[in-house]
Image (cartoon, rainbow, N blue to C red):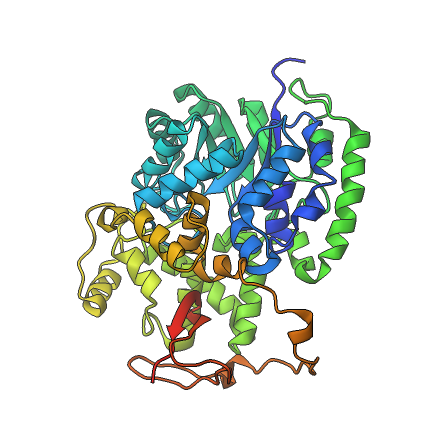
Length: 509
């Protein structure tokens, strides 16, 4: 076999993030990890993205413990994670010292390859992470967030790939988060990047629009070094193409790799059982081809979430209207790619535009994009939108990298944890920086059985419309537990313009 294409496997991260709301537990992964490790995959994506949030918020797991456990169970194959550049795995920028500490901590815990991307494709937001990965002796994979617009040309992406190689990236990847890259573009882009860049190239896509498998084939023809696949049923749809499917597509091709079909079937049986266990987090809409994503450039997993959000807002009948607003907002905000966190920001603003009128309710995150706080946008911001953002905030657009304005925080984070009698190592500090409420909850002592209250009937939750609504410069009352006294603290999660915020409230008289 001559130069077989490498298959990386995503089932333990992007597979279940895309199709099961990132709810697969470490225990559900462990039986499959040794099998995956012996298959011959070039890498196993096991961490990063939404998995850290999900571990803490929903699964009660320490994400670093998950990484160590999976590395021990699958020690031979390089482990891959997804890092949102200066945002780490959150939705806003963090100081350089926190980014550096996070990279060092996950390197020590066993991570091998870091996929580093920025939602604006602003290389300035990748530099700290790239340097930190190189310092740790690990592999830095620079990601090109693929999208289509008048400013997103093949030439522009090729130039970014060249720039990432100069920054020190060990490899480059085309990250097609919405699954919209066509076979023709995939072929042309891979061919030109391979001509201009000397490091390995990977194509990462989603099968949301039904294009990924064919685009993978075109990329293989053009000389791509690696593609990324998953395992059914955590494959296809809004996830990556299934491994067996890609092997069938490449059968007879000079670059078709060799995998044990019996082992792949064994994995399929295991994950079919896991998928059934996670059925309340799966949806048929995510399992099938949705050509709407070609028009709206919305990541597949966001479409189903969007339907639920609009239903909660009493706007279910406005779904198509909201989607049609998204391309307009993208244009106004400099043709920004739609990937975490910009996909959530643009989606929320589209909903607000439809509900209240264009820019009548301008969300703070959307204003921050216009003002350059998330990075340099691919195209210019609409002049009227920029003027409105400046008027509402009293601020001028940033000319520097947003993180340049942030003070170092590691010493402060360590002191905060020490005051709460919590661990103060780097792992604890970075998790506390991003998820303070959820991280603290890991260390709360369980209530003794004898002290637990008697079971009570669980009533349906009060609809969101009936909950207290706090308008600007207004207040609202919330019922508090009777046992709370002056000086006690209460951890709350509030939603502002569709974005969740962790808030700690200290009671006073």
